[in-house]
Length: 153
Ligand SMILES: [Fe+2]
Ligand SMILES: [Fe+2]
Image (cartoon, rainbow, N blue to C red; front, side, top):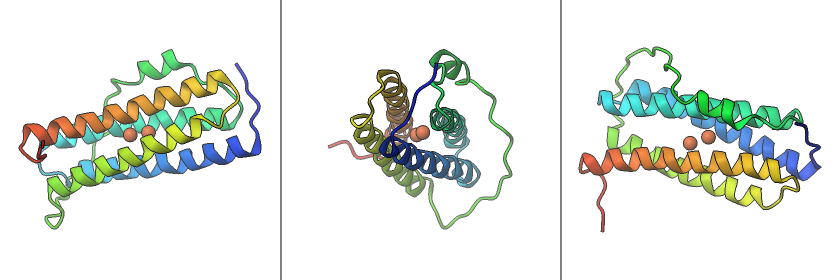
């Protein structure tokens, strides 16, 4: 299925593309930096999901509506092995806080972008990605809560 993008839609997708690239970079770096193996795994899983998002955004930019079923099948991809290089200056809690802030921001930019799109199929794709950003945030939140790193008020 194809779609034609307005200039504004294209600009919004270019922004989303750069956000996804930053997310991939962060999760990849933080998978290396995290001290807790459980947190490393969360980072690796989210990194794979961000890569799927980047693929979807690139497809939209080329005028193709991605297949959401194909996206889902990528969820359990085995993460690529990473080098272990602990950086003690940045604690796992700091790292989680930064990831949570990033996911909140990215989710809100998808929410804003969705309202500018004419094609329902494109809106659905962006909505699907936004929901996954919220799931990434939830995984980080649940991890922090389970470790007593998040003060629920
Ligand atoms: Fe993403
Ligand atoms: Fe995300």
